[in-house]
Length: 230
Image (tube, rainbow, N blue to C red; front, side):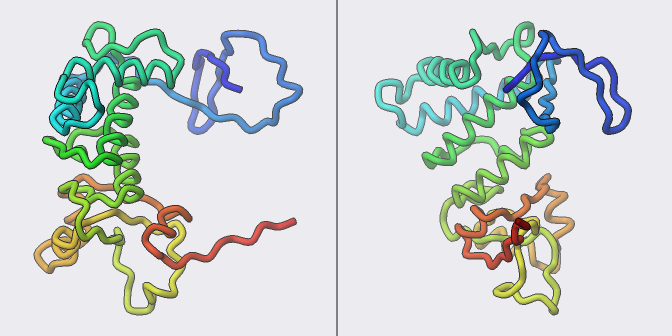
């Protein structure tokens, strides 16, 4: 159940929220989630990036009747976003748009682009903010695309920190380890003496993604599942 409310105060990890409507909570647990919205106006960089992705999709000739038509692509994805999020409209204008919806909209466009091999004219890792950058890195891992150049050829799982001589890549538990999808060329760059992992991550604004069971299955990584206590 999702309930709207207003954030009244916050102190560290403790927040006080006033709910918009009265809610009968007797049938729900004490565990809740919190979705924070950034309602500031969208930035010029966000808007340009969103339109650049839609132009790339139009150029890729995917989508039947709206292939090659930038406006048709825009209308389709705006309608889809509104339908998926129960909204009346989404705006990419400075006056009406907000950063949260725009970032979510961009993430939807990127997921589509990765799944359909759309060549992107801009590097997403240079355009995305905060957690949205990590979400893109996760999508690249799932879709086996290089997080830097976007190619789908020769994709390898790259660790975000040195494994060390004591760990065997075949036998170590990868669950929770930070990783990313790189093509062979960028993977070699990551491990070169002139770069190194730390400098590589900082240069390309990468955060790394914790390995879960889905990632481990795709890249044939060894994991040890935690046994559930009964």
